[in-house]
Length: 466
Length: 79
Image (cartoon, rainbow over all chains, first blue to last red):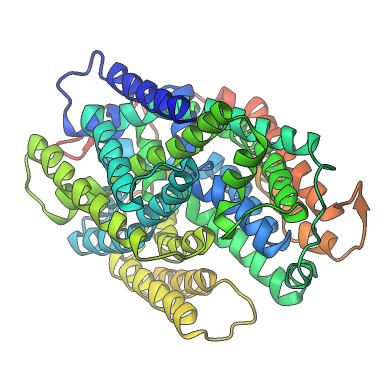
């Protein structure tokens, strides 16, 4: 198991080194967004990689195991519809990035509205809500590395994983991330298929367990549960387009049609979810040594598969965390070195980003060492805040007279409302807290647009290319 | 393909197939081989969404002219 696991990690490093070929001296834009040169295939693997993060591999079966199929509705629903929304919105975000020479999402806001204040607000919001996402990847890595059974402290192992993620980034930035993503996705598809099919084959072996009463209760549909599912699907499918990493991936694409072609096939990539559901049900109906819901997938793999195959499965899952982690890091680095600290030269942006990334990795490792939240809960928290950039993004793409001050007010109000509802447990009839924030945010932006229109600007959707 | 048809097939059909259809189907006590109907329908929505986007691509977007925008990342805008 150990040899197979380490073999894949070494192979991923070789691929990362290979990605540097022909790009020895990278400028900042090449390091962060590959100078917008990626074709459909590389864009596809980068963008779809976000679908199969550690939250999916561990969090999804864990969520089904802990909460039943009501959870499936919103988790699958929002990812599926995010691809649909992305088909229409992402090519416009790509155009906006090209027109404004953007490397990060706040670049778009600053350059379109000529507002430094808006750039700072968007950067800070994104930074705050991205922090738990790095923690989420390390929490997942802890679960995976524990399954390997190495006699090394979990903290040391996560530090090694952080060092590996930093190495990918240091080698060639987003290019290394894309090349490793190809390996990770091939491995992960095989891992999910093999684990699920072997689980089906072993379905009747062993004494069958019975789902707990709490689980059966969670399976019973309630109005509140349905309201949560629907509002979560809507807000998170919209929010997916303004996830900072997604924006960075969009900027790597060579053309708008490369994005559209990739978006058409992205939903098919979700055909792995029925197989993950089989794994979750297997764990639920068979007696397995599972201490927490997050351990469902590695526990089933370890119980059913031969050790070398388990090593490959765990390596695929570990790479999913590492690739997503590199994407987050490459989104965070320039947020600081380009958006929050202005005036750095192109070379300085790249170097300071690496310092910021190293700091972020350490912060996330420390967070993971002191937290044990369910992975999907962190996923929800992340979207509460990130989604609030969506009305502003629509203003860039479609509105002529949106006010940057209204967008700032909308983002701040949306964030505050969402966090207040979540933290104070304010009853809103099951409506997703981020959705309530998004409604308030949109109302502020729209009210300003019609009651007190700002300076006229050409929306990106109205710009025609030559 | 008209813009109305493009948005209906590309956005309305996938959205309506998931919300509110899946929660509504979840209310029915119907299972196929032990699997709840709502879950099976949600899994069926995956190829359906791809099909809808493929119709938009082949019926409209594939024929759009390729956009050429040369970007200056330092100056912050198109050249």
